Length: 127
Image 1 (cartoon, rainbow, N blue to C red):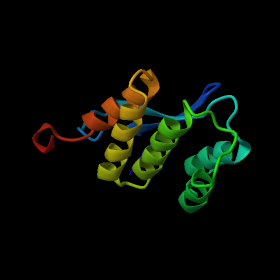
Image 2 (image 1 turned 60 degrees about the horizontal axis):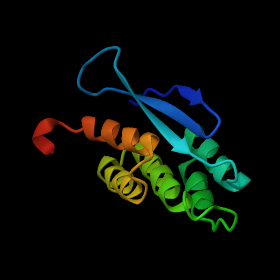
Image 3 (image 1 turned 180 degrees about the vertical axis):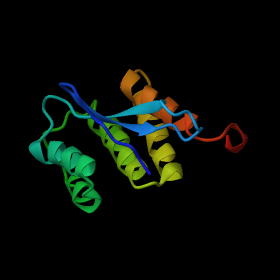
């Protein structure tokens, strides 16, 4: 069972997942990312994902976003899609999307931390 608690910031909204290694009080933080210019539908997609409406969130994430800047749209979109997959228990697909987001924006520390936290959820024998 996933333990979720919400964390809010200006350009990121996050959740925590309980560590599956057996540590009672260990959680990993993950952050959905949006820029100041993100259209309302993308922000709504994050809210829907955190509320458990994954199909609604997916539909809004895949809508075209003409107002997005070329610099952040692809990597933020891959990051957010990866976290949506993570919330649905699709750990492998989430890892692929988070890696793609990191490849697109290697200097973004939030994306890098999401990727590191997802990698830490896999047993070392599976890496």
